[in-house]
Image (cartoon, protein in one colour):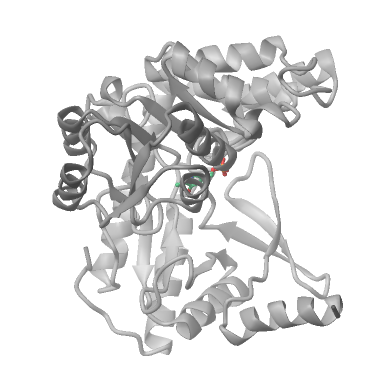
Length: 409
Ligand SMILES: *Cc1c(COP(=O)(O)O)cnc(C)c1O
C-alpha cells in the first residue's frame, strides 16, 4: 500500500468536489467580543467582527464565568488528572451536574467532554440498555446523533424533517411491544427552525416511546431560566433525556444529558464515551456552572431578550433590502445564496474588504443548491456593526447580481 498516495487521493476528492475546508485563524479579544484578529496565511493580520460564532450571548467573556475559572484554576490546578471513575470526579463536576439537573427539572445530569460525545455515547448506549430498541430519528438530526444511532443492535427509522404524520406512520407500523425512542432537536441550526416538541411528545405517549431532545442551540437562550425551547413551551417534563452543550450559549466547553436518576446511572455505568476518558478540567466545569447559574437569573433574561431583539433587527433590515432570509423565528439568520461559488466569494469579500467574518455553509453540511451564509447576531453586536454588515451585504448582492427575493421560509 502506498499510504502517502492514498492520503493525497482522499484529499484530492474533497478539492474536486469543492468541499475541502480551510479554517480561518482568529483570536477573539476578551472584553471586546465580537471583535477578533484574523491572521492570514501569509502572517499579516486584520481586525474583524465575528458574525458566525456560537457563543450566542457573549458568555465566553462574562466576568462571573472568568472569575469562577480563575478561582478553580488557582485552587486546584490545570487538569482533573483522571477519568470520572479513577480520581477525576471533583466538587466542580458534582456542582455542575447539580446545576444542570436543576436547570432542566430532572433528578440528575451527566457531563461529557462535549455535546457531540454526549449524543454519540448516550444514544449508542441506550441500545445496550434496551435490547431491540427502535430509534426514530429526524432526517436533519445532527451528525453526533446519527453516529450514536448507527452503532449497536436494533433498528432505526428516519422520519422526514419535522413531519409528525410520517413519524406516526412509522411508529404505527412497528411492534407495539418493541422499545422505542424518538430522537430530535429543538432548534435545527442550519435553517434555524423549531422542532414540533409537543406533537412529538404526544406521539411518544401514544406509542409508549421514550423522547430524546438535542437542545444544543437553545440552552441558555430560550425559556424563563434558559433551559431551552422545551422549557419555554412547558414540555420539559415530558422529555425523557435532554441533551445540551456548555460550549455555545454558555460560552465554555463540554456537553451533558439530564434525565431521571436511574437513566443517568445506567448511562454513567455503561457508556464507553463517558467512562474511558479524562473528565473536564475543573476550571472548565467551574466556568460552565457559573454561566448556567448566571443565565438562570434576571441577568440571563435580559441577555435573552436582547439576543432575540438583535436577531429581529438583523432579519428585518436584511429583508427590507430584499435579501432571501430563511426566517423561522429563531435567533439564527441564514441568508440563502444557492450556489457554492457565490457563497464562498461573498464570504471572502466580506472578510477581506469589510472585516466581516461569516463562514460559507456549503454541501455536505446543507443540501446542494441551498448554500447559505449563516449569521448569528448576539447581544454584543452593536448597532454600527449591524449597520456595516447590512451595507456590505447590500453592496455585495448587487456586485454579484444575486436575486433579491421575498423571504424563503
Ligand atoms: C454543535 C452541536 C452539537 C455538539 O456540541 P459540542 O458541545 O460542540 O460538541 C450537538 N448537536 C448539535 C445540533 C450541534 O449543533
